[in-house]
Image (cartoon, rainbow, N blue to C red):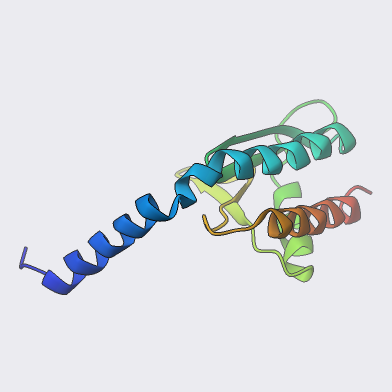
Amino acid sequence: FGAQTLGCVATLANLDYLVLSGIMNKIPKKHDRFMKHLRRMKEEYPFVGDVRGLGLIFGVDFVHKDGSQDMNKNIDVYHAAFDRGLMVNVSTSEKGKQNVISIKPPITISLEEIDDAMKRLDDAMRSCSN
């Protein structure tokens, strides 16, 4: 590997900002806000099997009424969310499709933006609930 002085300087500046700005200290509160919304959606929509998160990375599992994985609902929710201006990720594995969407917001997201994003996701799920 060749020395990349500019890349190293930029990386160190980013790390300094993350530490000195206190932005990392806000992640637990943002995590809790996301999880509050996602848990409510799990209670409201029978096709949501599980919600989970670590930091600001979240997963939502979709299931059939019998509890088996629904490999198509995540695609429906993905498209409905996109139509509402929200980008979520459709998770895949080495074996192909999975029944999960993931949400990976920037660490700079505000609480108001979290509420707006979760309203859009809720609207997308509601449109897919028939």
